[in-house]
Structure formats: structure tokens, C-alpha cells
Image (cartoon, rainbow, N blue to C red; front, side):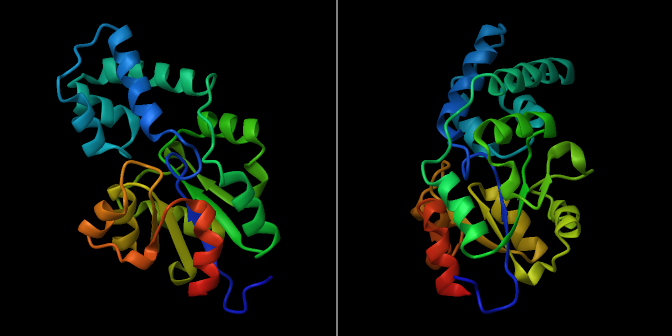
Length: 223
């Protein structure tokens, strides 16, 4: 089935939306920090949750109180482990991406705070790369989420105006960036935020879905 309106473009975040890495990722970074001999604040989970979605080195500096060198070393180890010990995908992710491409004929992009080599290792491992028409990683552009200018480059790569784009994310930073950039936003509950959390920050109920397996129905309903 093809959509009958103007071509729709879906842009995805990766972690917490396609990759089931929210909870396990938080625990992994705490374990790696502890193994590296860093002091673990008692409220570390709250600190990490507050800034989750921020680029890795900045997240580590804020959450653990590290200097630039220590946060960079820890972040590189985090990436190394992530690229050799993959988190599973959200169960509906691979099927959904394939259906959106083959059944609805959508153009799809990805905007993520992961570095490119790390991301491509995971996408290639799961056979997802060919689903995306454009991919923007942290090292591809000078600004990153939650700065709304992060969308400038991916929109250019996709050749799409913002009014035909939808961004699917799992963090407040995702919502903030999309909202200011003028891109419609859909929030999933496969990260740390659930329906009540999204509603508390003003996201409309109709734009909250349990996981991306519900995205096809959302698209057909709204477009």
C-alpha cells in the first residue's frame, strides 16, 4: 500500500528506538566506569537518566564528574564494548523498517549521537543498513541533539523539507530538538520515558506509541 499524500520521510533515532539499549546501556556504562576505577556517585542512575541522549563524552563528564581525558578514554571503551557485544534490537524493529520501505515506499533517515563507525558496525551486523537513504552520526556534523540545528544536515541529505518529515525518538532531547526545528515528533516507550512521562512534557497522546512496531498504523492514520 502506497501513501496517497506528498512523500513522507521518517527519521529515526537509533538507541532506544531501533536498538534495545536503554536500560542495558545504562548498566553497562556504570560497570565500565567502576572497572576503570572511577568513583560511582550514589545518584548515578538519576544523573545518567537526566542527561541520557547527550553525546557520550559530555554525558560521562556530567554524570561521573570526569575531566576531558578520562571521559574520552571511558567513552572509547564504551564504544569498543558496544561494537563487540551487541544489544538486541527492539523486537519489532527489523520487520517494521523493511515494511516501511517495501510496503509504504517511504524514504527513511537516521539521526543519532553515535559515532559513525560504531553505528555502522551494528547496522551491518543486523542487516539494517540498506533500509536508510541517509544516516547522520555525531561525527558527521558540527552540532548534535538537542540543538535543533542538528536536523539541518540530515534534511539536506534526504532532500526533504521539514514539513514532510517525522522524527521518531525516545528522549526529551529528541523531542526538544525536533520541536524547535519544526519537525513532527513521535515518542516511543522503549527508552526510559513512558506514556505518562511524554504527556507530562506536553507530547500529544496521539503521537506516543509503545514501540516502532506501531509506526505503520500511526502513519496510515495520520497521512
